[in-house]
Length: 68
Image (cartoon, rainbow, N blue to C red; front, side, top):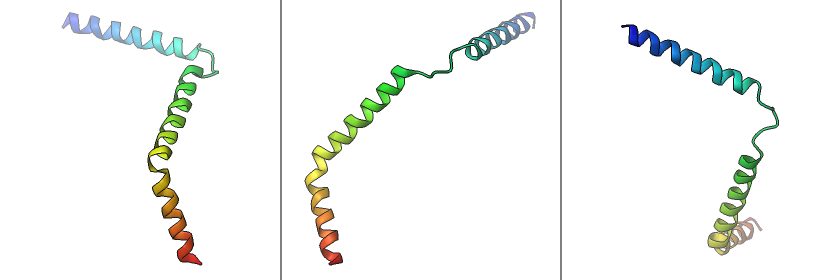
């Protein structure tokens, strides 16, 4: 039982230390993370457009022609 109590105290101290570190961190955000998300989004969009562009173009033309 004593080992469990010691582990709980260590876990609590670790949790408090991490929370304190997070609270003292600069609030500007994670710039490399945002850059990565942006680049991945552009890459996925471009890849989808390259693969499905002609089909999407045909679907749009067909939909617009059916309205006229």
